[in-house]
Image 1: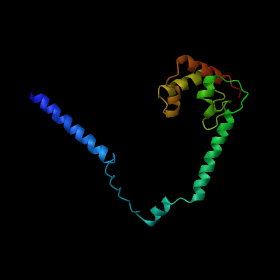
Image 2 (image 1 turned 90 degrees about the vertical axis):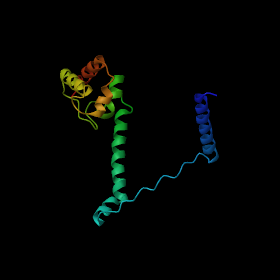
Image 3 (image 1 turned 90 degrees about the horizontal axis):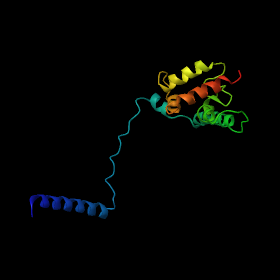
Image 4 (image 1 turned 60 degrees about the vertical axis):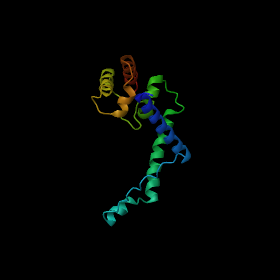
Length: 154
C-alpha cells in the first residue's frame, strides 16, 4: 500500500470510530457550563429588576390597544387605495393618510412626497422600516405612491 492510502484509511477509521461513539452515547453532548449569576449591586438595583405585574399588564394592554386600533384602521375599509399603498403604507399611516403610528401624510405635495420617499430608499433619512419597505420599490412605484398620497384630502 502507498502512504496516501494508509493515511486515508486511518482518517476513515477515526471518523467511523467517532460516529460509533456518538451513536452509542445517544448523541448527547456534555452539559453546558452554568452561567455565573450576577449579584445585585445594591438593593435599589434589585428592586428595579422586579417590575410589578400590574405595570407589566398595563404596558401590555396599552400595546394591545394600539394593535387593535391599527387592525381596525385597515379592516373593512371602503376607501379606494392602491394595493401598493395598502400593503406598504396603510398599516402605519392609515388608509386615509392621517397617520396611526407614523406621521400624517396629508397636505404634502407630490414632489415633496417623492423626494421624501427617495430619501428613505437611499437611506439619506435614517429609518430602517421605511428603507426596508422601499428598498425593492421601483421609481415608477414611488411616483405612483407620491401621486396617490398627494391626492388624499386634508
